Length: 391
Image (cartoon, rainbow, N blue to C red; front, side, top):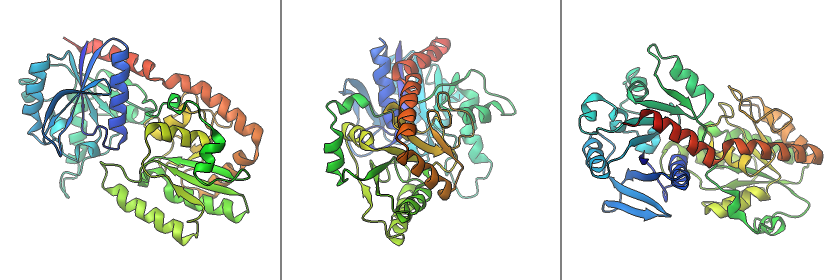
């Protein structure tokens, strides 16, 4: 099967949707399919089909407004795809909405290829200040008009299922980790901890991902301050890039968190790695005793940072999910805490850090759960959706 994967961001841009698209393409290719990536061309001349890490990448779309229709039609006619799969998240397309209307009848006259839309979240694009309900209608449009729709988590499935005219052919397929633990071959925990200035008698908390309003960085800093005030010898490692390439609100929130760190007097205890190559991210995750992920809207399978912690078999403390997450059971393979409760977060983190048996059990059980979220499994589920819609 020949598959075109459309994405608004792609490495070397930093962002979860781009990383997901790369990993899905790799897994589809490994399964015997021909997968190409079609993405934006912001700062360089358009390139057609150049291979990057074994994947054909067409950096050919100059804008994700209505202009993208003709450009995508030209590519589709040339490549003869069996199916196109839109990887959708508004920020990845710079809040432009041309991609939302690709499944429309008037665009289908030019692009005669079945279309599948994968929703990485259901946030609304900015559009214009007083758009009101129209903003949700724009997101809803590809859900109604695509040949099939994939969501990554239970909450998004429920929301789309509850449309007045429910979308047909709706599937839940989780994302996987964009950081492969195999990249940390030869990992030496003592050396990695020493790299970040962690003494042998200190605990190390880890946080992975951009500093984003929805990820609870402020709650984490307050909980970390509680642990420090209690005399616990602990440091916090902020793993990866600070803000990413797509969401402009990240920079403002990151500045807020950095000011909070200074206000709490925690500068010497919080270590920011900055952007790391995937192998370095993997080693940093493995060096941590506990990964703290206090999402303000609850843990969810749409969170790449959560999937990375699962894939690395780490003890995880995160916020209670709105929908059950397969393989993650409270006090068995994960520790859940209430939303937006820094005190409860501090208590849970201290419990896991100081209880070696609990930490070992969480690590063992979450490693078993990781088998549910491998890329070969995700690619097989996704290819099955393509098979149902292709001409």
